[in-house]
Image 1 (cartoon, rainbow, N blue to C red):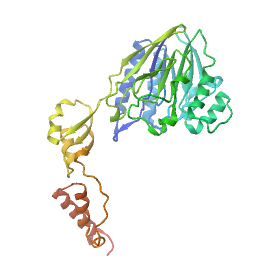
Image 2 (image 1 turned 135 degrees about the vertical axis):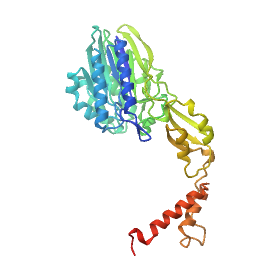
Image 3 (image 1 turned 90 degrees about the vertical axis):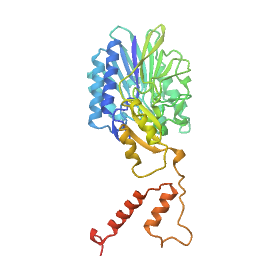
Length: 391
């Protein structure tokens, strides 16, 4: 059996207000091409199809087109909900998706109600897949009661509750099938990619890799955006995101995982690079130094730390030489500390707005006569009697 494992598409994600939908389209087109070329039997998308629980129409259209195209390769397609997805909304589309050869599991279910997906691939191999969409702490107790039939224990640790759920879902694994787990969660000792939602990735949301039973041929994980394998009784892999979602992920390698396994042999995993999408890069330097790098950055999106004091027009000077600079900051070495000082003793209300603005600029090491002149003109405009204000 040949399985393609991918996750964390985050379709609809913007970068510093810049849409990346065209890049996401090219990335998903490449993944479909890989699935077709490799003649995979099963595609597992381990959560976070979207970047938000309320994706816009363009993002939804792209995901539907991609999943339909994956099913069109002849592969079975299994998709689970991630913490960025609206699980109940995915479940609402289950009947439509099933008609297209796509299995959607948005929320945690019992084995009998879809928590375990049994299928026979086009090659005749049998697969049994335990599916665990993202589960918040808020609903962990309820899910443990539903799936594992455990008594309510609101003080039980998150990992204990998930351990019971995984045990219940994998109890029916067979010796004559390829046994898989697809889950969206944080495994202890996993390395963050840099763009995850930390509030739902912290220690309280982590589980040990030992919760996955040894008779599992492969565990397909989503949630951490860095490609990695974790030490465990079974092969536990994060595919990582196929497109770096933020500058914190600029060093990540974008891949999908090709998994080959039979009921009687261990899984063999091959990383296939995903080359579509623009790179992300961080640069440091003065404006002149940055200008000298202009021909080395290609079409990468840039985060720039300027090694000069703040001044009016600095961002414009940077973007003039580096049009793909989406974020421009002052290098911390050149940024004056914000003192948060109060007006000097004995001199508060009597100081003019120009004096207060001047002190604000001095506290931040901003010295630019043009800025002072601009402030003076704006102050004059808003206090002038001909602006329509009170008279």
